[in-house]
Image 1 (cartoon, chains in turn cyan, red, blue):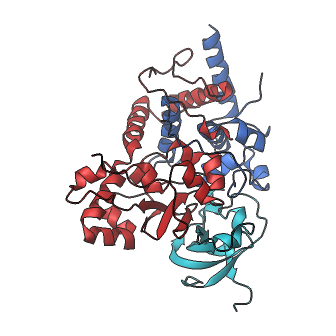
Image 2 (image 1 turned 135 degrees about the vertical axis):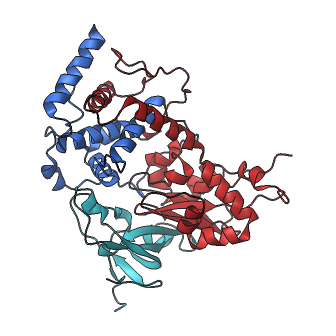
Image 3 (image 1 turned 90 degrees about the horizontal axis):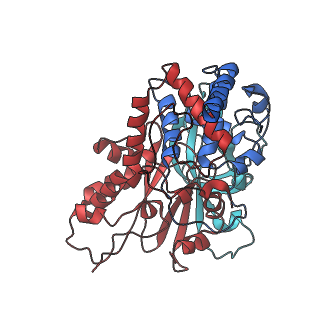
Length: 98
Length: 222
Length: 123
């Protein structure tokens, strides 16, 4: 199994409403970010939380978001970035980037 | 404001550490009385069933107290400031740097991010309070607070200012939301005026606040 | 008497019914909140001991609960309880529910023990 995304890829975070333990925070759902780091494949904590073995493993990425793309009400010149650790099953290639 | 901040400032000296008291004399004024009894009941049942022993409990508490200061983290920072090879390893492969010191996080991987004149890093976990306990000990009380967790991703500059840290507009803030299998530590900038200092002296300038990124390392006292 | 905090939903150990629900009260990134209390307060002995119980139950020898399970069970607290309890109180409520759902402790044993402690306290 290989990691689906590479450093520099633009990705959309899924917006799905998922029951149970979720490790993707609401404030990035539906937002577009950039992969800045590809980590190993980890047992899926959303399944581990239910007492399951957490398989299949999920690649973990560090995904960077421009501050302004998350919080539209601020100055667009803001240089700040928010980097969120997101598992692969929450990510898809950004719309229009196919 | 959430109840997260309600941590007592009392030392431990006034607490008695005997178990199976009629009512435990551990200091619990701000805790929900139902929870206090539930906690006592669970512990007594676990001990009666032989699942945990009082000695193990005491040993574990002492270990948690000892880890509180983030001693190993300070050591790593001071070493990175004085040993360029170690600094490089710490930044490129935090796991390997940890292993070289006989440390590990027991599952999660260790990532170190470096503060510079142009980039300032700050760490949070917005979903709970993930923290590299194996290196930095227990998190500061504010790190677990709803106020910090809610706001630092939204208005990092305002939150940092509450800690007394004011950054120039051109400095890029990177907020790392550490909510998965990575644990982060910030490598702060080495304070000016510490040329020639030993790693032992430098370590004293580094607190948890600096390793989370809400404050710089301390300045040397003249 | 107040409700049993080990069963805030009224279904002790009924994990299946909770799994189907969506809880995001803990997911606070970006929500408005007051100023940060930037002064660190050392954990009390009581809080350290709660932490120690978790550390021991989760260690590789006992392997009774996982960090992920504890997180999920804390999130599963009702919004009211999540706010009413402070940090380590949530751990106690969550751990007791996990121990019940895994039948490490039975509801009967727990109820009897709580009664016993109350009687000791009254005596």
